[in-house]
Amino acid sequence: MNLIYVDACTLIDLAKFKASSPSSISNETQAANARDVWRVERLLAASRDKVIKVFTSSLSVVECTHLKDSVNPIPNADIQRFFVELLSSAKSGVFLVQPSHVIMETARDLRWRHQLFGQLGSCDYIHLATALHMGCVEFLTGDGGILKHKAKLAQLKLTVCVPNDSLLLPEKYAQDDFAYLSEAVPRKSIGGSAN
Image (cartoon, rainbow, N blue to C red; front, side, top):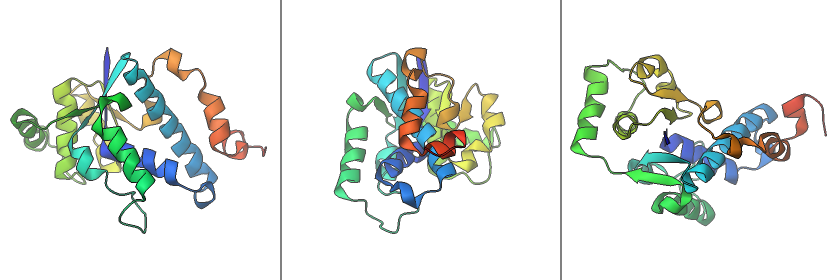
């Protein structure tokens, strides 16, 4: 079974996309976000069906308290409910991993032994260490600081990528890819011509 890790950034982007007004986002950004969101939703469906397993650290519960770039520091009740449902039960397809002493030492060693520096916060190290500890093959994120270290993390047998670049979505779950994108964003941003 393939094991995949999603960081809090990916989960926040999922909520942010669901809460956004299409007119507030450029067509290009909306198309990229739609592809990432679709891929995460399909991966979660596969995880619920026990075809793959999707993990995140329980730190995500604390990190998923707001929508990045939002003027409102507290999300509305619908977004709060979305985060609670997503992170309170494996029924969502996301399995929480509690940080252990071993995970914390691995997080430290990413800096000390593997020399991952710059633009990484303590939570980033813990997310990466959790993915390694659980034996995940892919680490999905939109965090540029983490993405900058993908070559070093590949040496540790962890592929770091944006969700749409995941290679682990089972074929059965990838069947309706274009249909979702066509509904999510104007055709102009996908194929170049307006609807």
